[in-house]
Image (cartoon, rainbow, N blue to C red):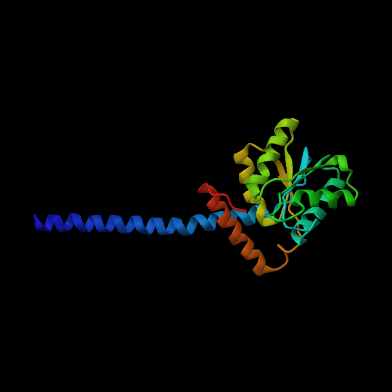
Length: 211
């Protein structure tokens, strides 16, 4: 009887050890798989026709787009001039004490660079990506858009934006990330962005909002 109990205990220990090993492997593989997906989507440039270009917000400096936002706007301007969408939607609210919003600053920049004021819609709310996309989804539904939107952001941000849009029922026709600006051109910086976005996707999957 004692030997039987020892045998059962040994088998139980081996099963527990395998379960722990499996959990460790999954804990390593899942982030790696997400990171691979972030990089894969970042490499695409889907210049497709859409109902609107949606430019994700980033920091503004007292009404002037910061370097990240300006790079996104330069790219959106190119896409608009190529005739891919008749409307550009700018997103992003402001921080406490700011006089301007990210969306408003982006709108002013686009108009100053030749986009007709009637073709730029500012959605000046949201302190993070998901909160900025919620009113865009409502705008798309209220406007009866059928083709979907063409997303403009940094390469590493696009996968998380697409997953959020899917969750909100916002149809994404495609995404065309910028290839200039602070988020590109430096390997160390690019790796840090991939790590950040991978963490963002995982946290988002857990139901927590991140910028």
